[in-house]
Length: 590
View 1 (spheres, rainbow, N blue to C red):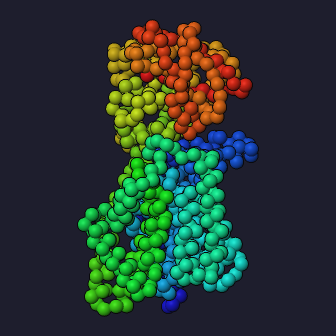
View 2 (view 1 turned 120 degrees about the vertical axis):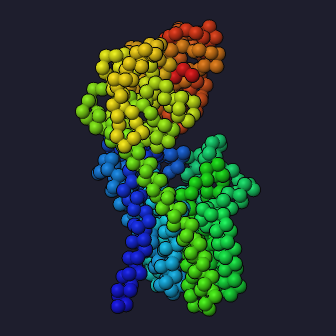
View 3 (view 1 turned 135 degrees about the horizontal axis):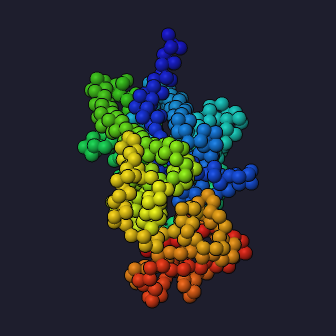
């Protein structure tokens, strides 16, 4: 019977995880997932592995394990089958739950407290999106390495074995490759050593030097942005951000969060008075791990709570374990607090899991539907109509069809009018009327209505409307990497490949002219280092200014002479002044 109880104690949290988040286990890809799935397209030899694994990506972050290796390896083996990715995420979280139970049992000598900590962490709404969205596997892997390193540290303290010390360091260093927030792990280990094993504090201090070195290297190769949602803001606003995350962690109900806050802080203070530091250690875990996110006040996300919530789960579990040994009144109060927390958090976590699953299912309907259409009609241009804002951001903006190696998939002309997105973004996914009109007229394009569970062929009715209303004006957007725009690309270019065209010396492009004095010509190049090129419009040189750098793409803007306003067509000549070839992406007049 004791062995059976031990087995149940270990298995029950894993079953609870599956019961609450099974929609995440069967979820498909969406949004940022497609950008990471495209990583394998950049690996052509072993020499490409180092930059693919370690070069800064995704807003300047360096996460070789939490993102790059995860997507690179699984996509190389399984392609765009989402189930292996989801199984890996769930397996990692299950390992973390087992570690949490073992850690807390060691700290409190209570198996029940370990079980309570696991259950409370599972129910936290900060964990819910991480269990459903493949792109934020880094949060799950980060938590695993936090717990693994701490577990090895406890074993090192208990046994004094050198092997545990080596494993402790290995888990800490690997955690830095999962998520940059793991730099704060030494603060957690040092605090525990200060409270319970001061002789081991000196073994933790060198880790602070490694974290400092990692931060220096990270910001050297990936400088922090000075504007946008990922810009860092240090100051009093960090306290407001901390309060927001605290309230989110306590549950979606403000009243329940307020009551639980009073109970949690009161219990931690009382136990500290009694020289029991475990609840305070849980509070410190929350504060330390959420700390790196506080300067990101413009990018507050619920999944940033996935790892900090471990601290609150340990605090709550300690309170339950203590109350169960006390009088009936304290047991009743503890049970009431748990009922409030689970009563508001579990339904919210379930709703989050269902929302993410529905979003992934909607994207799968479109992307896999297009794949079937392309398989049956490989030469056709596929136009998607009826794509709304959410579907655009979830299933179009991150180029899923490039992952699927399906060319010539565009939104129908005019789609930008009902999609909420920055100016100039939707047009990159829209086929201009000047190209869509002859393609429909000649039968080279098909139109499908998106939004439902099945793509619906509306080519016939759409063609009738297009022939009656559209005008064959010169396109004001040119995708140099798509052969559908070949008629507007002049001599001097190499054939388009993998979404770009290579320019060695000079090449011309035909594009629609400016309609007002505010219009400028935007040119994007797949390169972020130093390079030079010149632009001539209708034979005259025009000045270039840097518009933005994003990921691997650099965009320039060219101001045009007022005499060109109203001209239907412009001849643009791009001259490469760099010694090596340049890869060009888009030209746009806006």
